[in-house]
Image (cartoon, rainbow, N blue to C red; front, side, top):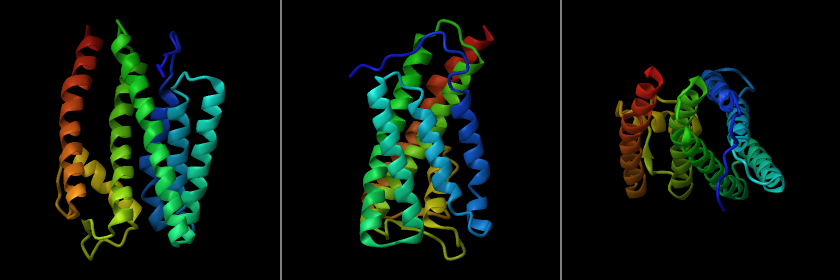
Length: 218
């Protein structure tokens, strides 16, 4: 199926960009405010909704995507309060759909960016959205690895945050190649995926963001 891009759609990525920023601001609160742990799945749900809106698929397919995203949200909520095998399995399945939706959105935005002859602020925001969504996709990969092997990552004893926040933090530390070393991959798949994320974290800004900024200045 070919991804079609809507032309002359100003501020197409602004809502997605704003939600990504809000996600980072709300993330710490989910661990420190009582009964606020729902903020993490809620923020992720909104990001995927706006990511889907960047696509130009037929309306029926978009509605199906929305339904699957809502299902993902409810399973993530359920997993907060029910750690049973069925709940974790449902979360694993819906996380795969989230990865697909985010990947489609990245491809759509990237195609749009490369088809532009003049770079504006919204296109730059689209490039930033791609970078941030890459970190979220890898976080979802890490949750899948963690589902199969709870010992795939070594968490230091002094970190009391939930696995979701720890893995999210690890994803972006790896994407930005900061490498604090407080959380480390142990499982072979976790190590390989973290290596790939580090490569993406270096190559994407070097190739795409730098090109967009140079074109924008012109």
